[in-house]
Amino acid sequence: MSPECLDNHLRKTLSKGRVRVSRPAGCPGLELYLFDPSVLEGPISHEEAQAVVAEPAYWSFCWASGQVLAAWILDHPEQVAGKRVLDFGSGSGIVAIAAARAGAREVIACDLDPAALDAVAVNAELNGVSVNLCSDWNLRPQDLDLVTAADVLYDPENRPLLRLFRESATRVLLADSRVRDLGDEAYELQDVIEGRTWPDLNEFEEFNRVRIYRAG
Image (cartoon, rainbow, N blue to C red; front, side, top):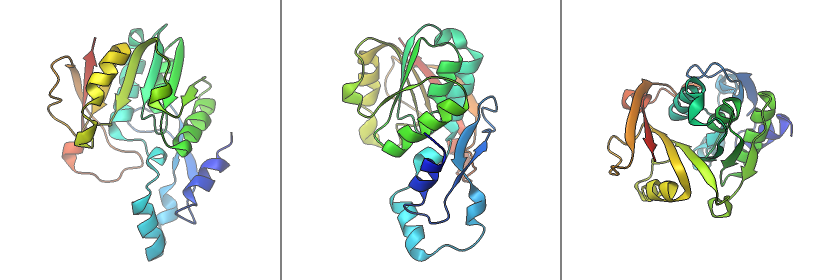
C-alpha cells in the first residue's frame, strides 16, 4: 500500500487533493499521511466544493479526540500492553497505531470506509507497526480485551454503541469532544484535555475539549 492510493481517494472529489506526512500537534510522537491544506490556496469549483461537503474524507484529518486518546495511550501503555484491542471508527488510524506502539498484543482497526482502512494501512507502515483491518463491526473477533473509540458519538443515534462496546470487550477507552454527558454511568471520566483537529479546521472552542472515559 502506498500513499499515492490516498491521493487517488481524495481526487475522487477534489482534483488537486493530496496527502503529506505531518505530526499532529496533539500527538507529535506519531507521523501520519493527512490532507495537505496547501492545495486549497487557490480557488476550487462550486462542483468540487459540493462534492467535498457531500463526501468528506474524514480519514484525511486527525480529529482532536483521536489525537488526545492516542497521546493518552502512549502515556499510559499499561492500559493496552499485551491486550487484543479493537479501534472502532479508526479513521486515520492514530489510536490503533498508538495502541500497537504501546505494546498491544494485537490491534484491529475497524472502519466502514475502505479509504480509511487504506489510510490505516499506510500510516501503520509509516510508523513501523502492525495493525489488522476490519471493514464491519459485525465481523469483529469475539475475544477482545479492549475497545477504543474517538469522536463516534457525533450522531445521537450512535449512543447505543456505548452499551455495545461494553458488551464486546472487557474494557473500553472512549474519547469524545461533542457530548458532555454520556448518559451511561459505567463510563468513568479519566481526564479532560485540550486538542485541535489537524490540519486545523478552526472548529468551535467547545469541540476542542476532549473527555477521556474508561469502562470496565
